[in-house]
Length: 447
Image (cartoon, rainbow, N blue to C red; front, top):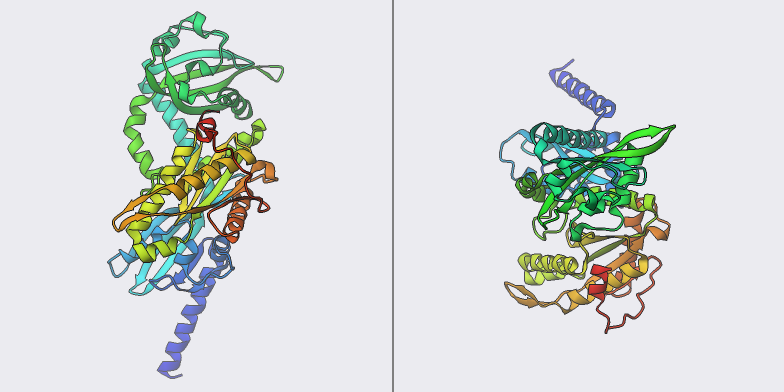
């Protein structure tokens, strides 16, 4: 056998070994050039990426992940070494399933000047376990290091305060007569006193055995502090819960020192809106609460009309100013309990707890008008912009976040088909006329 035949046989053997390794691997593997053009992938990689592609075609790994991880392309382009790890276990929040978020771990290795190997694995369970562990560790650390910041008391089976001790007065300033028989809302700051929070806290404790939550509290003298509240089942009588133990902790100092880090992890750097990954976490939890309590919840999907034209004619900096103004106008019409998030590009989503379809349509219309009337200052002068909006609610037969977002996206498509700069709900129905004499923004923010 000639040397050429031997070399060819060795190459074929190596290629077959590579194929065997890729197809039998327990993780997704994608081979591409430095621009992301795929030339080989195993079935598991295709399975993990399929929810992200609309036409079922995975030709470019960066394009496939652009909607959830646009930073990957920049990570690769800025990697100057000839070979080596570009990123390791970079977390990508793909979407939300009924039982929790779908999170991929993504590692990219540059193996040659124009050759990348991308490894994908589903780490959803690991992320959920880490979140629970961090929560438990925070509580244990607090108990051992900050005992003086705690108040201990108990609730009866209906969630009313039934015991009092000096720790309660030391932390909150309230006397025994001022708290006995009251609900947990006794300690809330006025702007945190959402009507459903206290009974919902008890309901979650009954379901899970314990529950922890943080919010602004206020002492008897009016001092605001960031409170961390742990409620746990205290005792059971013949299988029925007859009481709860409560630990209330002042964690203001910890909150202030961690806010900057949290803002980096949860906020879109350009617009100040909630980022995509954090929105999915918030929305999944909020939908669960709404379903348990039988409360309405609505989603508004929106994006800027003709945004590519704005970027092409006025420049990307002007486009950035448009996006920032849209986020600012959205925050102005929303309540403190609502969420505005940037999903990517020019697309935003608003989450409105305790809000019906009709109420959400009115909010969407007020936001549409506010953006339409806004004069946006840019480096090339003042610009005008419009937005299209789609509304969907849990009452529209949606039971999961994925179904709710799909319904809102369909309504947004209907709004664009109808000519843009309008609001549509599932089925394409336009909003009815709103009385211009009504102070709708004030009514919504304080209802």
